[in-house]
Amino acid sequence: MPTTSYKILAVCLGNICRSPIAHGLLEHHARRLSLHVEVDSAGTIDHHSGNPPDSRSIAKMKENNIEISEQRSRVFCRADFDRFDLILAMDKQNLLDLQSLARNDEERNKVKLVLGDADVPDPYYGGDEGFENVFHLLNRSIPNWLGLAKM
Image (tube, rainbow, N blue to C red; front, side, top):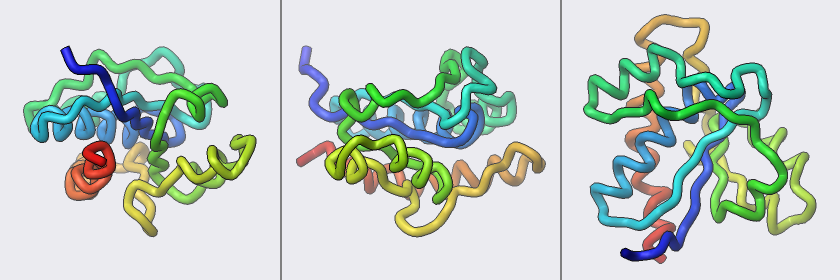
């Protein structure tokens, strides 16, 4: 059995909407590309720690034959900088929050905006169309990040 060679963490605010979708898509596309990647997700706040993803995130992923209901929210911790090669922030505020926790430039440089220069909008207070939008934005972006795992 091959060992994991690359580790990616997806991070949003509460770890129940955007980052669980990113987490599921990272695993899905890694399998599709036959990559051995370890994936996890976390939030910058602990309000939802231990909870499953938002039911709308679960439903959107299920529509696309990706199961995420077993994921559980957790809060980002400094040890994640040691554990992961790449940390994908869902928006600029998450990026700033994560970079402020970094102890050095090496850790700060691990944190990237998942869409490059744009935010993944938080769908929490909206309807199903927000979750649809998040799915499509992340589904287009995630395979590009997995290209780093091939290096």
